Image 1 (cartoon, rainbow, N blue to C red):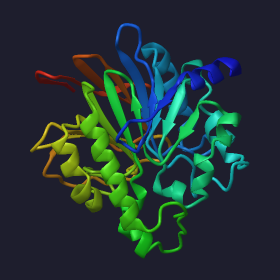
Image 2 (image 1 turned 60 degrees about the vertical axis):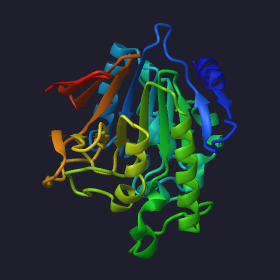
Image 3 (image 1 turned 90 degrees about the horizontal axis):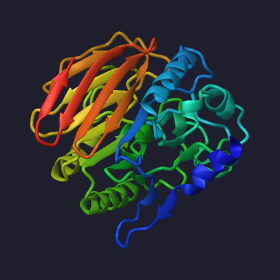
Length: 324
């Protein structure tokens, strides 16, 4: 099993674009051109708060869909990320939790705000791949999966309050500060990557919300700096965590759909706020999301901790068809 995982990892073709600076990975679609994956966020609690139950159902659905990889949208380890590369939380909250055969695939991960409260560099360190070869975490990068391009974005540095009013928290801004220069460079790289993409599906992943009716609401810095770019380049979906719930919100002025998959463990905040956007689905509990993509269709499903399908959505490039 270990050898096969290592082989799978090294089969990822790392390549560079002549223009874009974001690191890119090539992950081939299935032989029939389709792609299946799971998205999960806000999970790392040593199996508590139903993390283990969510993981079990992910394994069941992962086998059913024959998934190609898993996306983690951040807040991978609570409460304050990892201490260092030897932190036992990496194995206690990841390796020993997501044990199903179907989940022994590549995990593509970004950092959340809680990850920045620890040693952020530890999660980015390739040494962790020697402990568990599934793990791949970077600040920002692109996964080219043929029919779909996934743009992973480091959203925590965008949020001003983490810099100006961190309260009792300390954030690991190594290789990030100064903020304005980092964000400017990242947005330029993202714009180049989006402009180069000819994929049928363009999907952006970040930890923080763009649209949300739950506790954290919208992230104003992302709404101002990121959202116009996503609209301009025809992005189909933005997938995030941060709010510990499951949500599907569709835009009133673009084709973007905002999917929140932050139910990996602790949830049930009991907060729902009004929105000017189209709220298609909201669930305040634990769960995860699946995506099934083809050259013409995208199918998205939201699952709870029992594996029940709570909400389904299908889209083609010709028209939108919702199934609730």
